[in-house]
Structure formats: C-alpha cells, structure tokens
Picture 1 (spheres, rainbow, N blue to C red):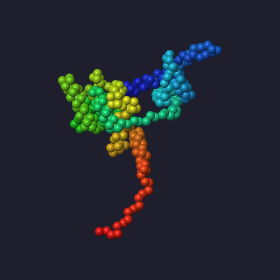
Picture 2: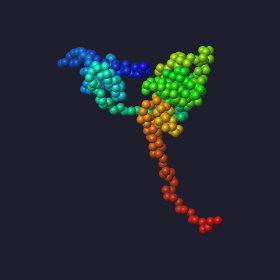
Picture 3: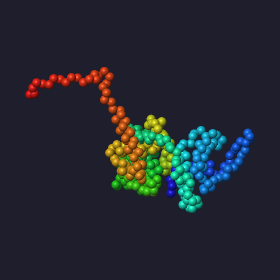
Picture 4: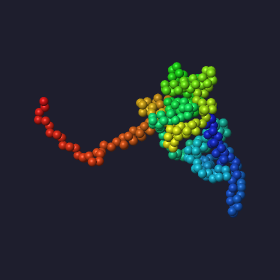
Length: 317
C-alpha cells in the first residue's frame, strides 16, 4: 500500500493532467467575438512527446478558476507530472492497452535544486527545548535516527525494543524494513512517554498503539504547524529550515563524528549509496570553506619582514 502523502501527490498529478488531456472547453476569439468549443480528451495512444510539450506550456499559463494564476508552476512540479504520466503509460503497456510508451526516455526539465540546510548542535538544542510537549518525542527521534517523517509516524510500540536498544523502521519508500540502533537519550524519552500514557489510562500501553501522538491523542499526520511553532519559539523562524533539516543534520553530524557512507546509507534507508554521497559533498563544501577562510597574512601594523636572527652563542655549556 502507498503512503497517504504519496496518494495525495498522485491525485494532484492526475487532476493537473486531466485538465489538459481530458475533455475541456476553451474560448477562442473569431473576429472579436468569443467562441466556445469543446476539445475532446486524448486516448492513451494519442499522447505524444509533442503533446507533452504543449501540456507544459498550458500548465504554466492556465488560469485557476476565476482568478489568474499568480505563482509560476515550477520545473519540479512539471517533472512530477511527467513522472506520473510515464508510470501510467508503463502500466498501459504492461496491460497491453498500448504497444509502447511514447514518452519513455523523454528528457525532463532541469530543476534548480535548493540547498540543503543543516542545523548546528546549538540550534538542535534550542529547537528541542522550544518544541511542544507532544511534538518533542517525535523531534527527538528525528534528530537521533535521521528517519523520514513518514517512517517515524508509522512506528508502533511493538517496534520499540528497549532490551537491546533497537528500533524497527518500515521503509515504505524502498519497500522494506530495517532495524536501527536507538540512542540512550531517545530510549529514555520513549520510556517516559510510555510510562506517562500507562499512568493516564491505568493500563499497559497496547503494543499496536502508535508511539508518536499529537495533542489530540491521534497519530501525527501533518507536523508543519508544530514545526513552525518550534522554530518561532527557538528564534529560528525564517532561517530556511524545513522538517527534513533534522534528517540532513543527522547525516552531516554522523559523518563529522567519523561515521562512513555505507553505514549512513543503511541508517537513512537509502537503497543506493550514491544517494548518500550528497552529504559527503556537503561536508566537502564545509571543509573547503574552512580552508578558504584561513588567513596567514600579517595583521595590520605588524612588520612584514622577519627579524634578523640573534647571534649564536660562542660556546655551549
């Protein structure tokens, strides 16, 4: 089964594609008079690379409802639409509805990637102190495991093993499971959460219950508001930090403390260590910045020539 966030993305892709490739009404002007006409929808075997190019133009310029589109559709959004359409056409080929995927291998747009922002140890400490009581356990797990938010949201008490300090993670993105080490600080926090809930309900916490719950007592679905409140309380609002910054920060600090890329790839749930290389590149940039910041020039006012060596002693005792 797909995660709900993935399903939401697919629904958005489908809605956008249906707006162009589905049946739609357009208005054209003939001798100054607006004429409405219906453009029939495209069959799967009628979709061509040329049609995909036309879709890109339409998607960028289409109006939204009665108003005008104010935010330009990004190259990343267009690429996600193309990726979804490619997947649909591949399924159509597998079901023998069409002979071949007409846009297979069609080049995507070049995306302008955003820089990954990691937090310093001081920033992490401030964030943990400022987080809401219900959000803090989730945040603590994020910075001590580097797991994706969707992976932590799915953790149940049966996945927490205090006896050997292990945490089982369901890696839905790579269709597998993993068992990772649990830091003592995280283990202590989860014990506190478990004992508090047991005291409130006056019964042992069921192993099927979710570990991380919102203030409403329900599993977390969207933590952006809690994240924003924590940033504001920690004085980090407007710093460009996103919830994934905890994952990036974990990876960078892991490498800084001497961890290797292969172990980090396993910890993060990457199926290919090449994906993990981006964090090594981030460390290379930090190392280069450190080298470039070095300055061995003489301070202002200091002589630039070395003093003459003192005369050598005539004899040594």
